[in-house]
Image 1 (tube, helix red, strand yellow):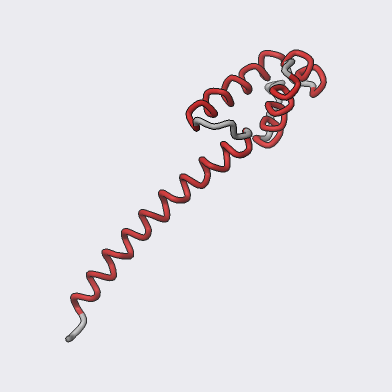
Image 2 (cartoon, helix red, strand yellow):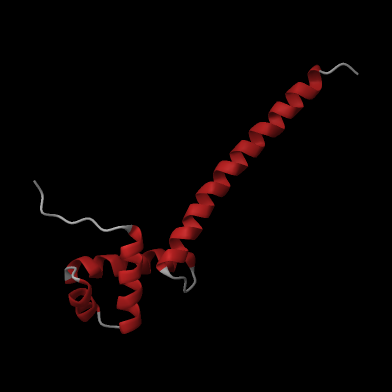
Length: 95
């Protein structure tokens, strides 16, 4: 059995937010009960992701934007399929 704890994305987002706001990762890690190295990794991952976004979005906002981008891609594919299906069936209708 592993002694590793797992954390929800929401917990990680909130921890990163606290660490960035307090500007003291070590103290924040002690206060929330996670390892300092772990919190550093989360903050660094957030900063990398945030740099890609080019804005000062919160970790939760970054996650939400990514979710919406994935959903948008799915909807675009579905829309394209429906356009092709409509064109196919329109050809088979008697005029």
